[in-house]
Amino acid sequence: MNRSLTPKQEAFCQAMLVSDNASEAYRAAYSTKGGRSVNVNASRLLALPHVAARVQELRDRAADKAVAERREALVELTMIARGRVGSFLRDDGSIDVAKLAKAGPELESFQLVDTEHGQRVTIKLRDPIRAIERLAKMLGWDAPDKLEVAGVTFNLNLGG
Image (cartoon, rainbow, N blue to C red; front, side, top):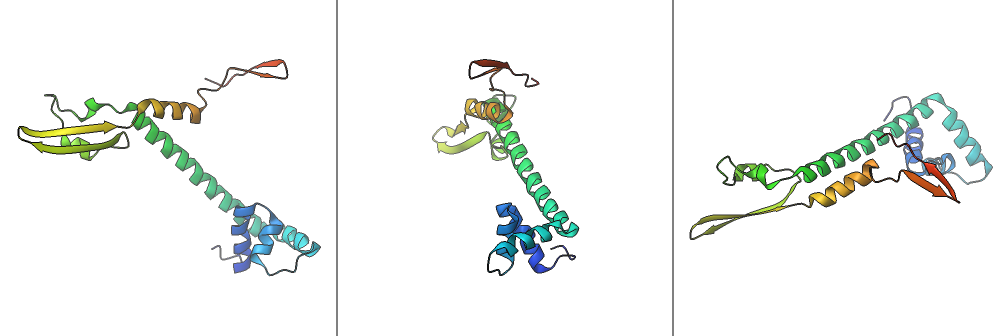
């Protein structure tokens, strides 16, 4: 909590992230009877520089977290798309179980089974085609070059 804010002001700032409505946030943080005074008080509170700064700080943190989660998803999908059985093989063509144990999201599962003739390894990779399709959607690669609205065609320059 920011020390320059009262506990109720901090609660107001936190509530602003949930509703993005100053009156609703005010009602959540303060005991009110409703009416016009809620709107006025909420507006005044949000106009205080230290309160507005805290709301912006919380919004920035939330945005950073959302971007990091998107970036992480893109990294994982890229690893899945690039996943190859060959990445788990030694130079002699045998399977390197240590590499399987350290595999990333591209490996859905693997199973070691002892047989009469040694070990058998079953490897199941995640679907790289689905990962590529998801990447294309997230990055806008599959967006149309042209868009027709009400009989008017727009040529889109998507920078790629």
